[in-house]
Length: 464
Image (cartoon, rainbow, N blue to C red; front, side, top):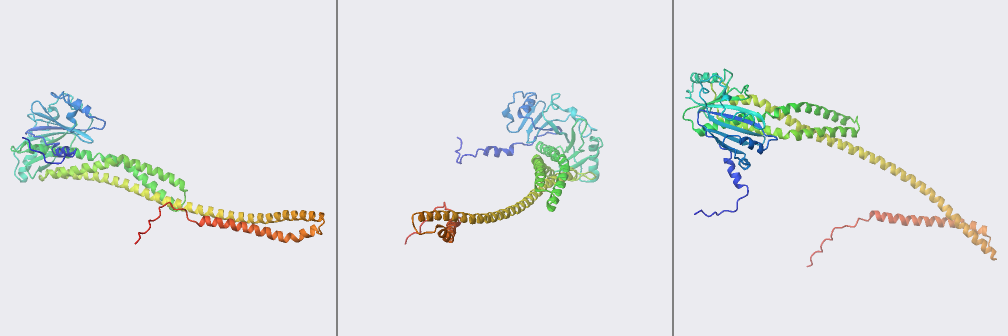
């Protein structure tokens, strides 16, 4: 009888998040073994293409797309071989584990490991994508020497012959439970060679963890270095942009160029910098992430030095650190340049605002002068208007006086009209002043009265 589940409903992502810890388990490797590792950039390569390629393996022509949904798949092959497929964000890696053929172990001299690949002819070369890493890792049994320089030098001699007497970097792993060596050299086959020497009692799980850490250290190193060409390519553009910004800032300070010209140049510069930021931000962030993984994998190796030989981690740090510093410096320069452009834009905007304010003040002064002239003209016109109105009123009064004289009244029309001229002028002037005063008062009240508020009236205070 199944136990009763006494839990709230699961979050939709609970199962996938919980199983992520088991998503990419280490391989179980029985020594001696040969591990073939190929990593390809998967930009533009879909799962369907990778599925079709995996179907070419013997016994796996029935694979389906759903089998690749977990981004991890381990396929058993004949003769004790195993192929592991893993898809990552930027690359896909294929790892083949097979028994190490006779004659390729520790006693060999510069063995041609690529000729021992137990895969269908042409299968590796037809992997969809572009190769970013290819490693052949031989893992062999041998008794490890005591912790003395002479004994360790005895084991290092066959190791160096195995690499063709090249300069070898080697380390004791895990405090001394195994040795790892490589020359970081690309051979004509396109593969790097690595060698792991472990005692006969090494478990399959430990061998799998050793291979995983070494191979991941190398692929993450190469992926981290993908930011270096970008930084080098970006360097001339950054130098040119910084010089342009310095010139714009100097011209902004001395006011030797118009604001419109400065604005056009600054907008063009900002557009170029923002385009570069959008294009390369992901690459710089990925470089930081991959570099952190390299450091983590080196730490997990828990290296001990072998006298007279540079350790893997030391070699990595000395060769990788300058490249990572170059990438980080380019990223900082790009971010700093963007911030400086923003500050320069603010300065230019302030300069434009000040110039606009000065123009507004000049325009306001011209408007004020025009209004004064208009007022003077209006006063002159009003004086003429008073004279004209008075003339017409006097003319009417003269006609009235002539009519009254014709009616027999003892009136001298011209004398009466002349006598009324001062009174008419005063009355006309007085009437005009009253009209102006009435209109002026209405205008002042319209200006001074506040706009009607649309806010609701405050509630009345409670009584009592």
